Image 1 (cartoon, helix red, strand yellow):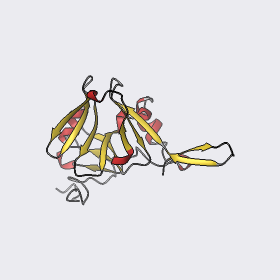
Image 2 (cartoon, one colour):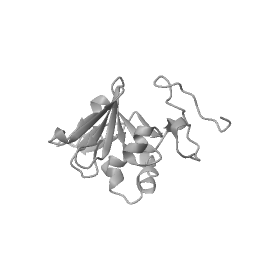
Image 3 (cartoon, rainbow, N blue to C red):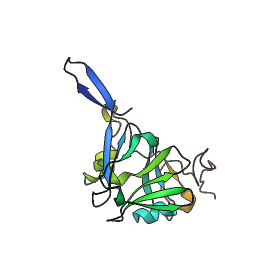
Image 4 (tube, rainbow, N blue to C red):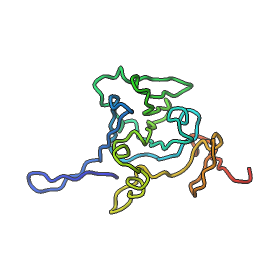
Length: 179
């Protein structure tokens, strides 16, 4: 588990789950997450592609109880309902921040919205590749591709490529080059 350590007045060490913060493009719609993630996926679905204007998006799954909107004005949260989900955009900048599948116990957050990712020139080299050093838990490192059947380009890496999602949320079918 990701933790932050502190020393109390009697010199005992206490640990608390690590808190990460993030925001939309303009910085007005803010959130925090506390503790470890559930998953880290490259998503190729149409909604993620359109929301980020990218061929695929790194999505970090956070348990519901660990995610919190922290801005003082939730009117900034523009919710775009579709099917059984909602997508959270900033009403001012239009920045795509998160998605909440209604029947799922998690919130899918957009990795590039985290302050750790925004404060570095090259997030891949400066954040993702450094995870795991000195026992730091992986948070951003991708585990798999999802919705790969909707891809707009092939990705040449060794990560598993699910046509939709791993079961139980999807069929669990994997992409193979012979398809």
